[in-house]
Length: 102
Image 1 (spheres, rainbow, N blue to C red):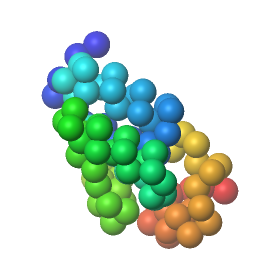
Image 2: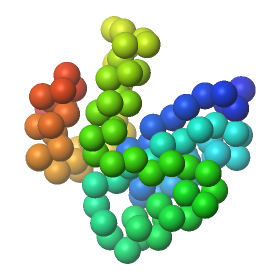
Image 3: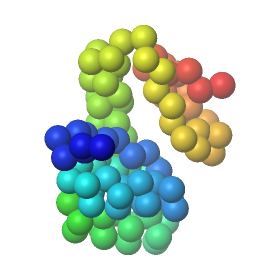
Image 4: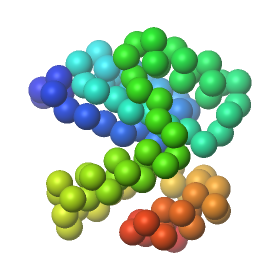
């Protein structure tokens, strides 16, 4: 597995998002992280992940990145792990930008 030149968007800075980001960074990947919640845990983990080399992005950038991915690999589903806990406003925003969250 060669990840050094690959880029990843991790949406959700909870246990699985943190672990995924740490693993990918340890393999030399470029990681972009996002979380809509501003809890103390999210804030502190975001800072820690940034110190490790991750790039924190804002909501608008997430959809720009997803559009770029869809252009590079059309007809490929994008799965957002944990999408059942996404707040309704983000579900609507995602669906309005080509996503399909029920």
